[in-house]
Length: 139
Image (tube, rainbow, N blue to C red; front, side, top):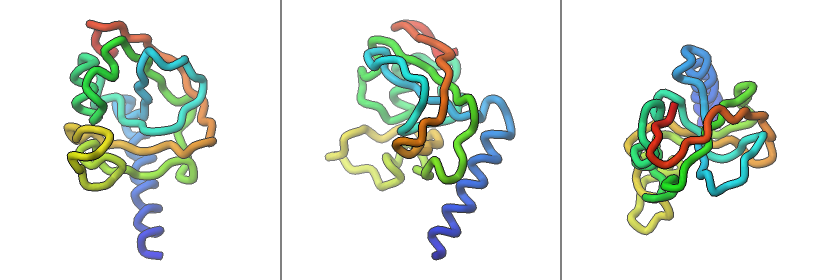
């Protein structure tokens, strides 16, 4: 019960944080190799952690595999904020999935950006705000 209460508080805090400033808005960054999407699930972060950065820098910040974004990336914003029932807290990118990092893990340790996970099959509508080519910075 206490863990549920803590999650409720963390989720309320996340939503308030997203509403605090446009730079705090949640965004989704995916490889340009993936098909464009109109809804989002999976890991998200705040725009301020990746804005103005190169794709290689974003990989390091987010704890993505080196070269995952080397062919370019799509940047999405949400048409509405996720509700507390639609996402889970995942701590920071230096703790993949909210768990201590292990060398045998699928992803490297990130630089410490906040992250959340939009639950599967929630279908939160998104809007593509940028297709970022190799060598361009994230707007």
